[in-house]
Image (tube, rainbow, N blue to C red; front, side, top):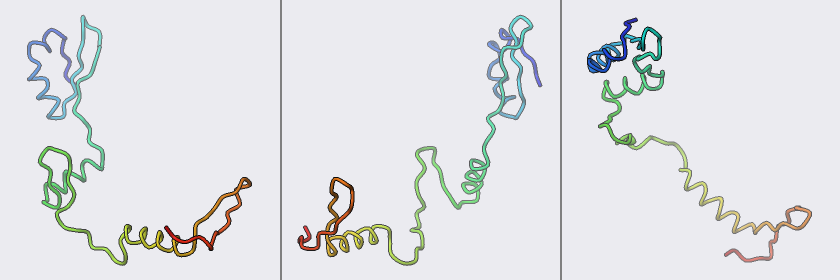
Length: 114
């Protein structure tokens, strides 16, 4: 670990930042007392995997908000929106649920769907 006084750090900040980028930890001192450590950012496993995907061309990132894949995902069966719409139609067909003071549901089959 490299050790540097605060005055020297101020004068040569870009040099010490470059050391940190290269993986070196820099101990910052003020009048001989340790006050801080300048260290590289450690990536999580998820971040490392994401950068691997970008480097191999599976994913892309231009520095902005991440965007989804250009290819639609391959799915089997119905989409979530189709299932929700189907459930709503079934509820309209069976009838609405009405709740009384004791919170016992009662199906009201004589009501017409909206």
